[in-house]
Image (cartoon, rainbow, N blue to C red; front, side):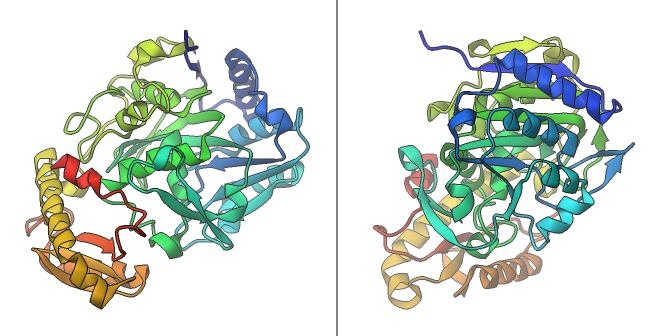
Length: 410
């Protein structure tokens, strides 16, 4: 019989002293059964907090959108008890200095205390990493070489609502790692219908976190950046990313097995369902061993809320998905000619034609928004809402994208 993944849920008031919060984290790790054995033998450990944006707002002293340093410190202390090797903290903030974020969020003391190496995942050298099992939307990703070499990884996510993925927890946290100059800022090429939820599954497969922590001292409501604070007062720690996020989703008051167009997945499909189908872990709570303050699975209903991505209800996003599928068909019909004239370039397909193209991803992003501003109103105040299909033109045998996804969705 397969052993159920274990997830610990503990009340942890946001207004406790840092030392008390660190003790709660250590208590949760003990309830989990301690650090997994991999931490003792690892030569390089990747710790991925949420430091992916310059939203350093605070609510009564606690960060709203980014991971609290005291939570990271508690983990680092436990790791250093069993391992004196290299520990890397990494994220890839769009158009921002990771070092400045480290300073502004209060991470500098723990970087010195535990001899941590800080790596901006947007920086070279890069390497291509194949997705174990073949991937769900991309067969391989370009990633920073240093972080891709880690033997063990940890995701320390902030508890947040997300406009496009519904919830932003440990799996979504890895989306901060693909480099901007490959995928555009902020990872524009991947932050897209069909791609985004499956990309989260692919990246989770690549980094395969041995420990997952959801910091919910103060959560973020309505949207992933610049949303209002929620005094959620919870810490969640698990040994499986899908199971941990499923419990986190339930603690936020949502059903982790629901599917688009149901709450909280109002824009695109539920990445937890895809991950579960791919064998990465269960998102059915009955298949998870949940320990600690399990009453929080029920008592937090109504604490977090969703609003519509782009100001559009699920019906509009369903129509947009159908439209994109049609543009994919047009792209595939045009591919022989596109390979002759635009091989290696990026194109935007709109109404069955190449509406814009660029030799680089940032040029594509700029042209995309020019078209969007001219033809559509993103926030839902009228205008046409058709999303062009953006694609790098490559022969099928060289293309990392799994195009069957669009055919199967039609």
